[in-house]
Length: 125
Length: 144
Image (cartoon, rainbow over the protein chains, first blue to last red):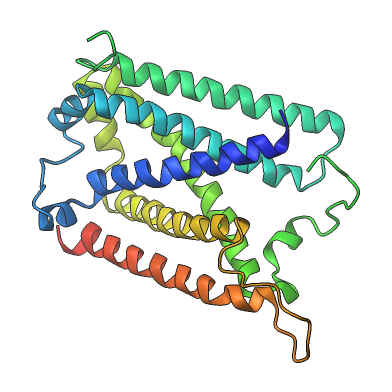
């Protein structure tokens, strides 16, 4: 695939991360701010809260979307940094294949974890 | 990126030392450092949070392993890195699309450069990231 296409996906993934990671950070870490806004919830890392989010189709879908976007954005950015060290053709290939395999494996693992959680919401109901 | 016409002779020094490129070059370095830090954290985060797939006992065990003041500071650094990386990323995207660089002008002395026109946006990015980081710091540590 041409670099321009990959770069465009990198920017697009960044926008997805901006929205979804912003939401994730707010829910997980800015409890006092949520309290000011009147949407205070239970401790977000307690199992009851985790199970409630896992049971929500919205949270499951956005989790998988954020996982994919963040892995792509992160690993493509890392690849670009490595490419600036001007690796030879073989090493370039190793970097491309290696980062793709690791990224896809992490995506598969993270998606499995999201869908296998007890009570997780899936498209099948 | 497919060409090897101009090899990177400076290596890592070329990334870290801004030289005549100045302020924006250090933002570039900080963008990369924060990005690499976020990526490293994210990979660990995937493994830690995957324990929910096994069940509540496994989840509680993982959460107690990553609790305490040291981890709280670490999480805050991740939050601050995200704040900077996100706001600076918006700046980079805006500049790539031709915003905030000004219209082309005649090269008449004293010369005005596009980099000089971008500086206000760069300063704004630092200020916004700083405000978000301070707000987050208060929420993390003071308003509990």
